[in-house]
Image (cartoon, rainbow, N blue to C red; front, side, top):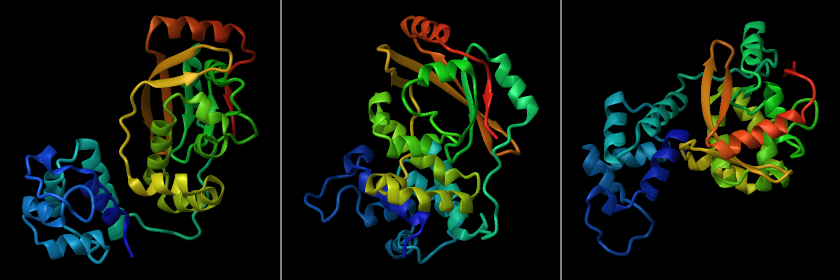
Length: 278
């Protein structure tokens, strides 16, 4: 039985081409990407040891081995962070508690006040499960008519994978889907993510499960939205962690003048003010 660490290591090996690392291409191979022997040689470990890690038979590789694997695969800094995080999960450092309660939905008053100060900007408070906990009027304006905020407990991850309108709303749906799947690995707690994933998988189907197990570390570039009223919006994103609540403040800024004008027009058609869900 594999582990998240082994799955990620194997996935990155399969998607790394030998020529990208200056290695000779020895012709036809049974699987794409690098051979285990390529990675083991570059990392200075045995093929047998790398096999144990990938197959989940070694769950506690040392920090030095993790660094060596990261070097061997030429991982980006964000990918190395994910490798270390998965090693903690695999090694049991992130413990599982069957009785852990679902993450709280209440947003602290100081965070809500910060959100108010960001009006008329586009901002929301969420968690890694994708629950939309609070949002500005401008966020409601740019998502109006898409179905994203329908219901009493909107969830961005569920919307992306189960609502057909999401594929039209998100111009780069594949990238957004990778982002939402990846964030489930980061919490707010391992057991909560597993509970949420188990409930979503039957509804979302193999598309969701495949992306979850690929461990693609997202680039999080400019977000392109196709608003139902017509304009395409291009938004830059910044995320601030809200500790210790396992929540995040996401701020979106127009990436160009055309988007800024469109957001202003959409905002003039909105109603009400800051919305918090608890």
